[in-house]
Image (cartoon, rainbow over all chains, first blue to last red):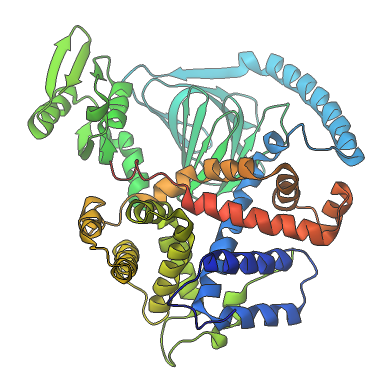
Length: 327
Length: 199
């Protein structure tokens, strides 16, 4: 590639460089990459910022594409030719699934009566101190069951949100079961929130692992490090990392606080509504896009609507157990 | 898989000043972390200010080259204003060449809130939306190309296994993968909608 044309780019100069960069990157990932190849690539990269810009961009996207692995099973389309090997795998998977189902039924039958059920109502909060020194804090509108089988540490979060501070015990891992997933703790502080089919796990300290437990899918699992937030639904799983400040804000409920930081009014209202029977309703899409900052006690509905009135000049109207916010 | 980390090996080959603290590794990490997530917004900005769509990719490449060249001397403190100022300047010099008066672009930077001192929620939005864009990228690939990319990146098969499975040569597998890499980058970085971040 000639460098002299840099200031007056002819058409598709960028496309050209992109193709070259892609050819390099594809070769580098093909599996027979020698030190000489690396030297040649290094030389090409050192030739111009143009090469570096194009190559780094493709490489970064290709690295990001690794995340697609969490979706392995659903991504394989029926239109892709299966080979004998995958049939064999399917058969093994089918056998394993039957065994798993039998196991699940057996477990369920023996365990159902041996769990203790804890529940909080709207706006409620409860702290459970377990005999092993672990602590669980239930947030509003939550149902959690604790297994009572000796030597096994297992809880079921059926609904709502809870924060876990778990005493590590390598011989007896602590497991949180949710609808479609299980979280295995490796000595950590983390929160789990179950909202319909949406699961959110936030890891504050230590390490944990999230596995999907759907019998029909291939196994998905993610290892979490501090700051990781995983949002999983039945068909998807995404991982992002949050700074400590954002984590603390999310866990404000443990101190009875809701902390908003550039939060849209729609999200803020949804959060307030989790804790209060007096429901806030926004009936204007433009209003829901406004953003709020601030800290509110979880029950401070009047203070919240006051801010809406005073700061945004919105109209607030209460009818029965609903409070309408509009322009 | 074979390791490919050109950044860590060829620092010496990179054009930078002796004793300069900026290494190629730093520049690359900064570029990937701060600049690439701005691409959708950048493309939107370029698109609004330049009629001829076939020039957009060249503009983007130009912006990246200028930004990288500057970063290799000193990494800019705030990526966003730097990237968009560079883009604006490139547009203006191009417009001057074609004798068009570029008044609107200058105003436009303010509308986008780019001049303002705010890091913006771009990166967390970017991460949150990443999986969806990756899937969209896969959907955009022609079937054979998609198959090669899935077998390579998701299933982790070797080039030879993919070639055997698809009944094509390893070289063609390589071409499909290269094609897929381009589409992935364009969707992952280029497609991010800006409507949510400027609300």
